[in-house]
Image: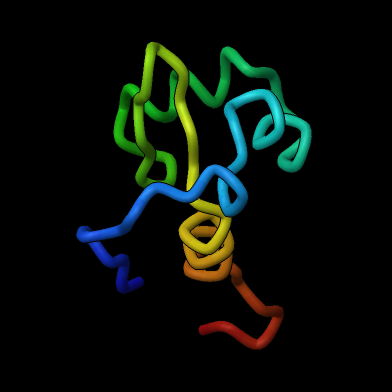
Length: 71
């Protein structure tokens, strides 16, 4: 998975922790725990709030996709 480390923050292209938790069907606490372990997409922390770039979230999800034909 290739993620651009020189991203420009664009609030219109981000989701917060609560939205990501809903997307994945888990609790906000689970997202916070995964993030603290490094097991979540890259994020910004701005004024105490966490934001995820939606393109990084999609890339992170796709990198974890396992097809039934995987060996």
